[in-house]
Figure 1: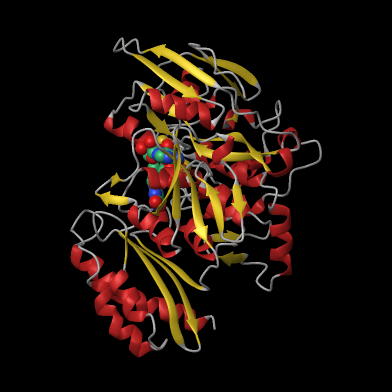
Figure 2: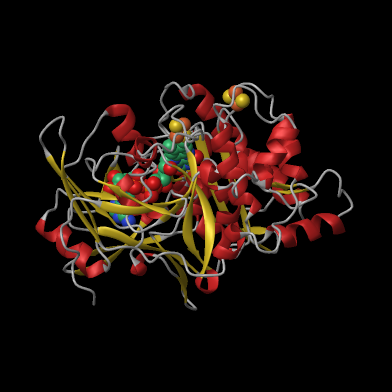
Length: 501
Ligand SMILES: Cc1cc2nc3c(=O)[nH]c(=O)nc-3n(C[C@H](O)[C@H](O)[C@H](O)COP(=O)(O)OP(=O)(O)OC[C@H]3O[C@@H](n4cnc5c(N)ncnc54)[C@H](O)[C@@H]3O)c2cc1C
Ligand code: FES
Ligand code: FES
């Protein structure tokens, strides 16, 4: 076991191959740190993860001890979270006088007008340029009949060069109309031999530094602390001693609180790199997902082995957010409109809650108590999410939002069903956005089970499903609309399943 980190007042962050010291207050985000050291390519557009003007690339661990260049929103991440890490900004892509192929394509295709969004697009585009699977995706497109249009599946659209255009879903541009940006993306080749950023992928990413960063805020005089322990046991001891410490994982929710609501925490505990929270364990009884895995990591590592999650993840926020957001964080917020709870409820997931005293396993259906209230006690972390096996074969994730991508759900519905000999043998339905907590549609499940799998059954159950929630009016949708979405949802599910039989 490694020793706890020594307290320091500076963090060290490698940016574009130069190590910079960070010594600001712990709530400082990575964007402000970068701009403070003169690297002003990344911009602040919204400060809440919506526009991508602040995108940068971070070296993250990939399979077989390699590195994956990962795009993230620097406005949401505390700078201290990058202690010991490697970052590339748009400034760091060029080689001497030669601009990077991504920059070249954006310039010659007219992908930049006012230029405010451009360095963020460049960072997201460069991360996709270096995505190892892009070579195979290009070959798959070439094999497909629609090679010109590209290949499309749930939330991915790869161009002829394998470039997934949804990798840019978190980047907004007010000027170009996007066509030239797409042309630039699809105009890219593969990295040339000797490309230093491509070659960097072959070595491991920096290990997660054990950090104990302590710094006074000169504006308020208050001292803040950011700790990243290297083991779960250490994290749990800190939580036991200081139950009020603020737990942070990907910081995609917390970063918005800091930037937009001005919330400050005296003491922060970063848990997202804890090795104990970052694995997927399979047994005959269940698949256990580490709570510190990001949505992008889960998508890659599960590779469709939990089809309902495979349908959900591409609809969750944007690639930039999914690269930071963890599954544990989505449950840690206790939000009634998080996207994972409806799907996980349909999968009958259980949460492993761990404190210094040990672990307990709680059904997700019993986890939510009220609006943003859960059974998780101070001192407990969500360490894993267990999905029982076998999985029901008929699944769907319906997300109703104002935009197809990069939007929070107004209503979300997860389905997992099994039909045997034309009869519904098992029905599990998870709902989000229609009550103070996510919930199971138990009355509808009971009605469906034992009934024939027919449109008549579905029509008969639609009214029951519509009455399962207690929806309210808010800026996303009216209660009436939410009820109408529930009413039509079962029919949509039935139609989807029949279309694929
Ligand atoms: C632009 C934007 C778009 C978004 N779109 C979506 C969307 O489409 N769907 C959706 O569901 N959400 C969305 N979100 C919300 C957010 O990305 C998710 O809730 C995400 O999963 C949070 O994970 P995180 O690791 O970033 O959590 P953090 O911000 O680090 O933490 C969130 C909360 O959870 C707690 N926490 C974190 N990990 C644990 C743990 N292991 N155990 C106990 N508590 C923990 C923290 O203490 C904190 O209170 C969006 C956010 C933004 C900014
Ligand atoms: S500034 Fe808009 S996403 Fe970061
Ligand atoms: S070029 Fe102006 S916002 Fe994109």
